[in-house]
Image 1: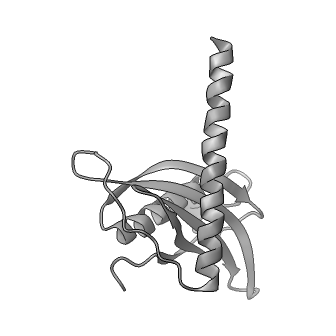
Image 2: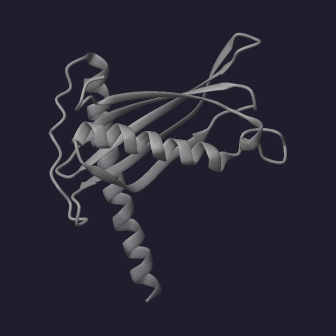
Length: 161
């Protein structure tokens, strides 16, 4: 385990207590795990406590079933001054059928804070591999899209007033 690492992997067995009425794993259960994984990845990278600022592009591609192993692959894709984008890919494995599926993906924006809740700077991400460089560029573009979307929502609110 490397402190300051920009990646994190976590695997969880989906047990019956995580099921919804249709017998699949409840989406809220997956969201809880996603938030925990984003927190762990971002806080380890930043070396600070972090809070969730936003979640976007949560896509449930396929249902997850009780009894399957779910692996969360997280990486810090992009860093600003105090925030980080954490991308998470969810891989589900049916052990009995030996089948692996990509069932979920999303992006979390996490902000580093100190003990009093004030934001603190995060180490700049220095992408090295081709994948890291691509993720960084895409993360930068998503950040611009988020800012544009926030402005559009503000103009909707202003139009209501």
